[in-house]
Length: 304
Image (cartoon, rainbow, N blue to C red):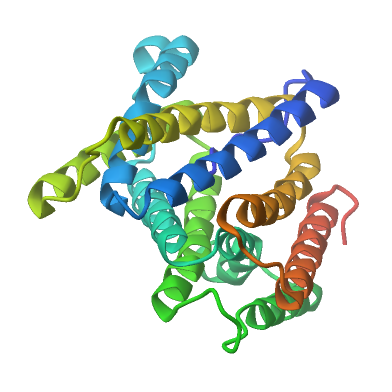
């Protein structure tokens, strides 16, 4: 859930079959991590899950940063922007894990895909970007789909879960905007190490101060270790896929997490697929893809 910020393959090393395969595997890992978090959420506090997630991500990310940059692995040119990226990223993932504890996996997965809508909504305020009427219309339609998805008469969500479920893509959008700025000056590998290192320290402190529940069984410990290790491979896969394939091709693939999340929710947690989920998901996906395609047209040399 922590967008790595790697840009499309700009070095000519495009490998579409491998890049797309890695992207699909990364999405599957992301859903698998969500399943594990939901499985353990009844027994372990969310801050403890976050501690293991960030701590166990570090070895692979540190090794990658050293391999890519050597002695400059921790060098950062824009520390203020990095601080914003860290804070918003930590809040986004914390909200996502907390929502998984309170709401259906399928619903949380769909809600996170409103991230593209929030990025478009916030870009004029935080980046000074101009958003035309077409994209504003898509944002309105997309949030309309979100309201349909969150039908108050439907079962499966609470007010706290709703706040966390929408807080995750909102702060995730702020993180993505900060990554746009960081990508102009700093290495994604270095920013990932700083983000995960700070996350490990912050949540370790919260666990110590609050006395949050730690794993008491070997099964819970195994799940937490799996969450951390799999998350590190998910971030590595995200980086590698963006190195091999342009982001404009990869972006729509991330909506595969919706059917994957819905299937996992039905098979593993007995969730029910409702008409609201189907129609709301379709509207959110269609609106987001329209925004992505419109942005691609505008950024193209002959764009309008």
